[in-house]
Image (tube, rainbow, N blue to C red; front, side, top):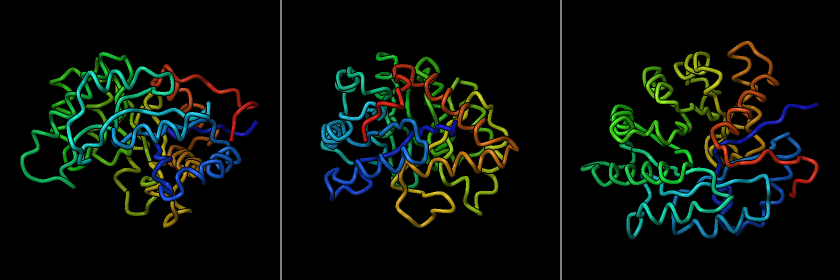
Length: 270
C-alpha cells in the first residue's frame, strides 16, 4: 500500500482566492493522487473564517482551525468567548494560527502579545491545540507560552525555522515541530540539522500552501499534494524510509488533533 501523508497546515482558501473555491476539487484530486490522506486548513482571519469554513465543509478529510494570524489587521481583536464559540464545530480541530511576528510588525508589540494570550486561553477552554507562528520573536514566544501555561493546551510550532534551543523548549512543553518546504531549500542548512534531531514522536509535516513550495516544485504555487516532497526529504535526512515518515507524521497528527477522525479513504469526496 502506498504511503499516506497528511498536510498539517495549508490555506486552501488562499491558493487561488479569485476563483472562489472553483479550483478546490482539482486541488483535492491532485492531493488524493499523491496519497495525501487528510489536511488541515488554517484560519488567519475571523472575517475570512465563514467563507473558509463553507469552502471545506463538504469534504470529510479536510479539517480547519479558527484564529487570527499575528500579523493580520482586523477591525477588532478576537474575544476568547468568540473563539471558543466558533471552535464548537466538529470540523474545527485547532485554535490559530497565533503567535508572535516581529519581522512584519514593528514597535510596541503588546497588542500581539494580548492576542496570543487570548488564543492560548481559548485553546485551554476548548481542549483544542494551538497552531503557533513565530518569526524573529523566538525568545518572547517561548516565554509567553511558559507564562501562560501553554503546555496545558498543547499544539504545534508550525513552519519551524528557529534554532534547536527553541525547538527543544517547545518540545519540553509537549509541543510538536512541523516542517514545511523550507527544509528542502539549499540555504536551510541549520534547519536540516534540526529536522534530523527532532523527536520522531513530535514530528509533523506541512505545506503552508500556497506559500513555500518545496524542491522540486520551488517557485510554483504550493498545494497539499506537494507535502510528500517534504516527507521524502526528511526521510533522506534521517536515513529512514518515506513510508516510516509518512506513518509517524500521520499518527502524530491524529494524536495532536485528537478530534479529527481518520477518514475512510474509499469514500473521500473530491
